Each structure stands twice: as C-alpha cells, then as structure tokens.
Length: 196
Image (cartoon, rainbow, N blue to C red):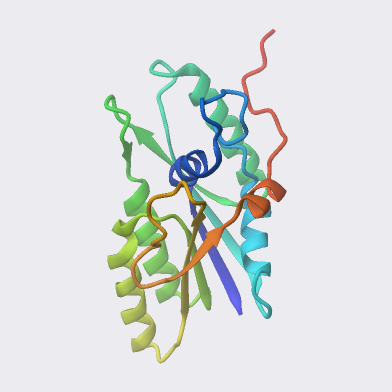
C-alpha cells in the first residue's frame, strides 16, 4: 500500500513541546524547537504497519519574514532547503504580524484532495491533531468512493499524559506518537545561520 505522509510542522512542534518539554522550560530541550527529522518520522509511521511503502512526504510550515524574526526565518529557510534536497515537497507559508500561519492548513487540505483525485496513495497519514482537516478528509473519502477505491486515513500526533486531548483529525484512525518514536527520529543538524 502506497503511503502519503503530510506533516503540519508547527502543530507537531507545539504538541511535542506540550507532551515532553521539561518544567520549568529549558531552551536547550529538544522538545522546545523543531528537532524532528521529517523523513525519519514519516518512514517510522509508515513502517509501524506491515505492507506499506512510503511514496510521498509533504511538509507544511509558516516562516516569519526576516525583518520580523531573523533567527527563525534563517532556521526554517535552511531546514526547508535541506528537506527539498531530500525530495520532500515543502510548503512555505507566511506568518502574520500576529504570529498566525497563513495558507498552511488550506494547502495541506487541497493537496490531500488533489492526491486523492490523482490516485497517488492508498494510505494517508496526516501528522497533526488539527480538527480543521476533518472536512478535507471527508471530501477525500467522497472522491475515493466515486473512484471505487477504499483508502485508509490516519492522523498521528505526539501523546503523553500531559496532552489534554487524545483525539486526532476527524474521520481518521488516531496514531499516538510516543516519546521513544519521536526521540528515534531526531534531526541532529544545526540549521541556525552561520556567523562569520
């Protein structure tokens, strides 16, 4: 079964922080910044079930303008360049003055429906707990039904006793990501801008 993995980068970061960051917070904690390896995590989620093959990874995040936040602009620019070089499809949204991502959710939802229409996958794994993706999953199921196809929809997200909700995206099977899986998929590269 061909697997499509779509990762909502900021949602993953936020949930990992809630699930495992130490209290009081330490900036050096790997759960306080996007320390996950996108490709390793996608592969681990696909490998958790037999008979699946990872065929596509898509990553979505907002990136602040350099004038608004130079550190995170440079970090994400470098990390997204690395992901693109690995063959990951990257969606780079913007971040508003109020620190809200723009375009990320819509892009992920549209990509899911388009991939369904084009019959590019048999299993969809959305790495997010965002309930806003529920309508896109419903539409993807309708498209698949019109094609006489039976698809599998799952949502994966960091989970621990500290996370208030254990619910995933509506219309999907929920796959909690435990600390051991997350830690095994750490990205040890330094994406900070190099100072000369």
